[in-house]
Image (cartoon, rainbow, N blue to C red; front, side, top):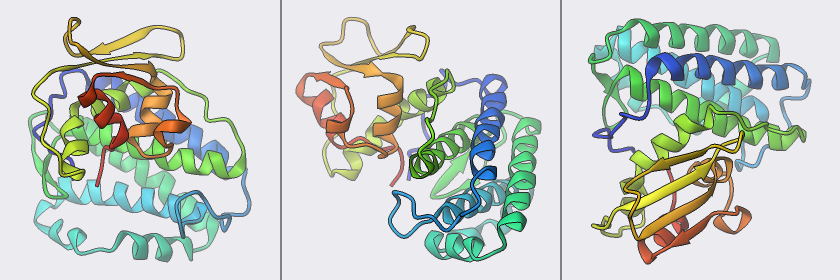
Length: 250
């Protein structure tokens, strides 16, 4: 699970929320045009239907956590694979309609609550800003599985900046998951966005550095591509170790 004591100063809800909605709309256009939701995706054992069911279930859990936090504990007992399988078994039109309604409701809830209002999430507390970034990341990552399955280009957009910022903030998780100590030296991350602009995090004079495209970085931290499948480059042992073990969730 993410360490929710993250520095989210690089993410603004008023910017990320419209991007979350746009990312959902882009994925909706792809899955709506695909009639066979039983097609297997790169996630082992998961079809397109599983992917959409998972997104729908997580959106519902966001609404539950905000509106009825005392009931959220029940969601912690759910098995993600079982929930996805149950959803995938439903009629395609029904699941699609529920996902559309659910993602709109989750976005509305996250847009309404105060920024400093905490609510329970998996293993910790969350906030509107963090939850919007997480929903955008999940929609994009699971969407990537679907884009790969149907053979449609997943066009990179500036929405990747929110996901990249979340990945940078969650650097410690990569080392924690690999049972390695967190580096004491700063790491500079410089990523090239779709329009050629360079997005940077960390001290300009840091000796440890990561460079590459924002798309490759997001594919890596969401574990949609291996390091060798990206064009990412690292300078310094800690930077290399980060990329080798990169992740944004357990």
